[in-house]
Image 1 (cartoon, rainbow, N blue to C red):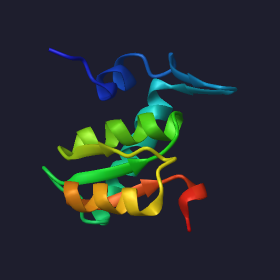
Image 2: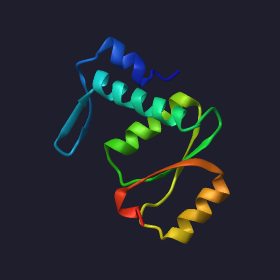
Image 3: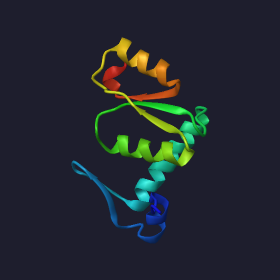
Image 4: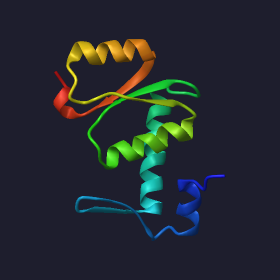
Length: 108
């Protein structure tokens, strides 16, 4: 059995959970961020079994999204953030993703 983020946030809230570059997050802070993202995804219509596209570079946001999607019982669809628009569109259509979280560089 895997012990999850929420468990660590309760039992060791002030311990370091994640270090990305100069940013350090405790278990409590990370869990709070993941919960906020999970609530935002739920408000966007994401539910159990739904696919969520992610076109993001490695980093804190990627880890938070992975955990938020898991809390909702949804599926994460990793999409290379360096792909071109038509390739991303194909992957979204093929996966039936209901939401896409993307790097700002992909805005166009």
